[in-house]
Image (cartoon, rainbow, N blue to C red; front, side, top):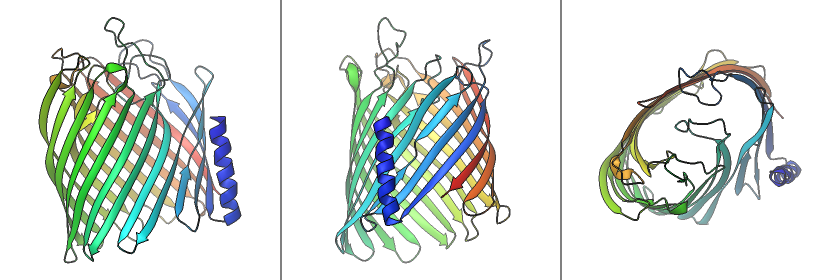
Length: 382
């Protein structure tokens, strides 16, 4: 991690020389009423204060060909006098091979906290993600685009914990390769039609199994007016699921989604969307899950200096018996509510403070988990 920070400082110094960078210091103090994600009603539910300090780095270099964003973060937790290090770094670039042929690429690395469905212990279980993607876009004519791409997605957990079945381990590490091909056609000034096909190959480490999916869908976009865009998509997912004994099961399910985006020049933004899809599972008993997610985000400038951000999300997750890694016929339903509200006061372009709340409510037949955080922060851009 020290080498990671040194690399960031070297990059920042390079950007400083070109005077195309922005540094942001972000300090926050949190109160967390359930830091170890204990189930409701348990006597050892633990609260804590913790301090977070992050440094954001944004810049462009090599004649704006490459864009860099990085945000290392240090957290100090009072309940057990522990210091944790998280962060992310990403690089994006766009290269015009010819006026009609463009290559977009990105690479990112992140170290993050465990996900909501992992709720059993006091360990600081975290995970590391590395994503690399490449997209080649060809414009044979003005209103038509043909796209082909590849993405590599690698996930590694900090702990390989026991599952609770003999001496079995979670084996949640995986590698996923995705190949994409699609076409986009603009009709008039208000309508966009996209047809997209994806093939993904996901292999869990440690012999846990795998899931391969073929996804085909069409997306229709309607530009209602200069401030409003509506999108609908519908398609099919064909999956081939392998359990840890090598048994293969074919599975097919529809996928669909819709969202609406509204924005104004004064800064108001409203995003409302829903999506139903098949995903990998971080719960060790299953290799796949079906997820229906509905989310709402509102950003509204109350005054030129005072802004409120509201976010809410509802997830219905189904772990089907065919996705069980032991071929044991086990199923599980899970419901998650996530919410946040942040009030920010911008003193000027370089200084602003904020106060907010973040909530997580996880409900299933085994345990309900409630987690609430409040925070106050100060951001300095220089």
